[in-house]
Length: 444
Ligand SMILES: [Zn+2]
Image (cartoon, rainbow, N blue to C red):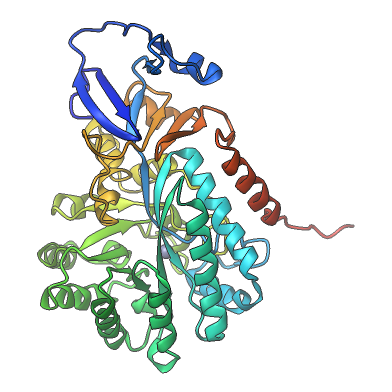
């Protein structure tokens, strides 16, 4: 997006970018075929090396979804949420989770990851249910399922796994969290604002993160209550422990309910602490404001102010077809559009910022060192059938070409039509295990 007046010539060898060069003039490349023709024939240029003319279509780094709940996706078939509140979603999901088998959880993770990949996402950080209140076995079952799914998907899409310490978890079997860390999860998560011992929980999570040398990613003040301010303790703790750059805070809905004066003070402290942030606009528009009568608060955090304070803030999917959010499809272009509505970001510069919020900013949140389109970096990218960001946001083109870890995984089909036989097989198996919630109306 740096210089939109220019076209670029990009070269890839062995799955890495080898050349990024501005085109001097609008000249067709010798031996080039259009992306469409090449995709249908999978042909190569005359030299044996495929040369493809993108005809001005936008090429972006692979989307990075910084916050999902893959293990919960497609669980709306068995877990309702009739009030539409976060409280009921949490309550109903924790009652139901002991009944989910490892295979079922793994299928849900596989299916939702592949769906995200089909839209152009090449990296995901997913939070994981860790229901210690049910039992250690239930909690670790989700971890095992996620580790298996992560390994199976590793050649195509990369997952980071963050188990969520349950609220008031220090009264529970805390050793089980250490077991999850030893099993190889990537970091530690939680939602301390739900806890009656929030400060102690946060301190203990820092202790564990330091012991296992992993990052922290917390659901933070996901409420319309302007006095919920676990963010203050997290900011202070991050600074005092020297953990800057390794702590991410998500949701931050309370900031949207505060006065400007209070919110500015908190955002300043977040910036000083070197926090990273993630907004989940679709889910917060859905879940927040449920206890208001009109006017109803929107729940989405202060996306623009946080960005303007220099804090890297991404927008991400959160939940797909589960009690927390009945919709969503793992498509970050859709999420960026919803973010645009929710945060009043529609000016040309805003659209370009939003595209960064689903690419290089979440790459920074995940700690990916080499995700940008730069010589020597791994070439993970998505080509979108649009010539400008304005066209992209207006049309959300279904037609996309996705290249990940050295191969084309999807070619512009309207539904996932996988180039890789293994992906086609994973998709079939995972899809057989998940279904959509259908309300049965009483007859008569
Ligand atoms: Zn979440």
